[in-house]
Length: 91
Image (cartoon, rainbow, N blue to C red; front, side, top):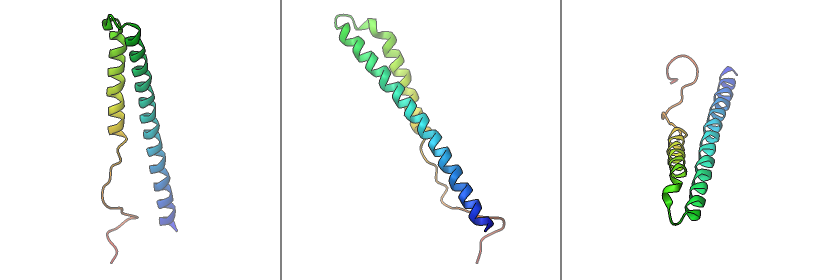
C-alpha cells in the first residue's frame, strides 16, 4: 500500500512540474508572437525607412531567443528506469 501512494505522489509531482514548464513555454511563445506582430506592423508603417523599427526588431529577437530556450527547458527527460522503495531488485 505504501508503494501505491509513493507512485501516486510521484506521478502527481511530475504532472505538476510538466504543467509549470508548459505554462512558461506558452508564455514565451505568446511574448514572441506579440513582439513579432509589433515589428511587422512597424515595418508596414515605415516601408521607406525600416531602421525606425530597430527597437521592435531587437525585442522580437530577444523574445524569439527566450522562446527557443523555454522550448529546450520544457523537453522531457527520460532516465530509462523506475525504482520503487528501498533495496535492490526483486527476483
